[in-house]
Length: 164
Image (cartoon, rainbow, N blue to C red):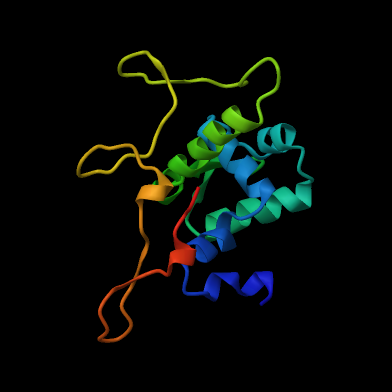
């Protein structure tokens, strides 16, 4: 399978990767969550070339993750703002941040801390079950495949279960 066909696979991870699955796009999203909106600021922060950044921004706009908003008429200039669909990627970016903080931070520690505005505390977000509130551990979750036309749902094979 070619990379440009991955969005056609019946897999939510593959489809998501077809939109956000490269390092430049993730850096653009990181910056968007940090409040960056203008092309030149994205370029300066990511180090991406103009053509590459133009392509990544166009893809994110095409897929409804960002929207282009004109902020100046002469010359015509646009900024890029997260849509609701884009804001939905926040848990992905924060999870990458937490993983990077845990496994990739240098001797000086993590470069960014997240402060919860409501209570003022620094925090590391965690996945939790919406029903019982228990923190999610991948060893305690079993993926269930969607039934195929008329069949009952089935659990994935043991090979699909995360083991430690």
